Length: 340
Image (cartoon, rainbow, N blue to C red):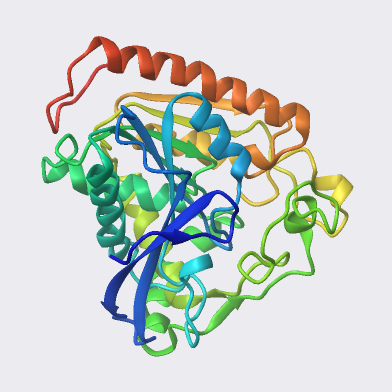
């Protein structure tokens, strides 16, 4: 791990993890851990935020809200994503989501090096899928408590493939597997002209400032190898996971069809089918709370002001319980089934 250096965000710091050669043949991999402010050795709680596809950490409002609740704040830009993308690499490309386990656990080690803290893991969209399967594997190794993980928050996790049912059939999966072996970089969905992204960035019809090279308005291309990795991970989730910790799932109350008119997609999830999130939420673990947020966008914390306030209120309500539970109980033993 490199030393901490000033981040692109004022008041934030970053360090990089060297991960070695890319199994997919795109050079050397690195991941970037971002920290809000100075180290907090006395902090009893920390949060580790993991972004989704065509995304990276930039939401300082979210960081401020967690900090106000006493959490040391960390975010991880996964390899080939955002701060971690290197020349010659396909943004966000991997053929196996389990490869993220190494950098996620190194992030936990870096947090623990500052001081012992209970870690709340947070994942958005594809990041929600990544961290859910990782925590299931962590629990299976009986390493959850040893690594300090004690909770999970998912923001519109990507639990199934949206679109026509034929995309989710076994023949389609077999075709993807066959194509992945010979043409894993073949593009199956090209960037759009805008859509959801135009409702977010302040240069268009949104409120937020971020790097449009790292999070382009029309998204990054979707490749065969990557979507096959997503489908394998979703299929594993559908068989049932146990992340081993209490978890909160926030989502919009409705999906809207992604169209070019930003005004038509400001109030609803224009990326995922929220009915699929509702259907598969029970596969995450045994202590799951699911809250639909009226008029929220795909990233509920990038919604219009009113639904965004509602999303933060729901997060605060769950954190009240989470923090009270943490203060009232000793750390849980790994692998326990928990309670409803």
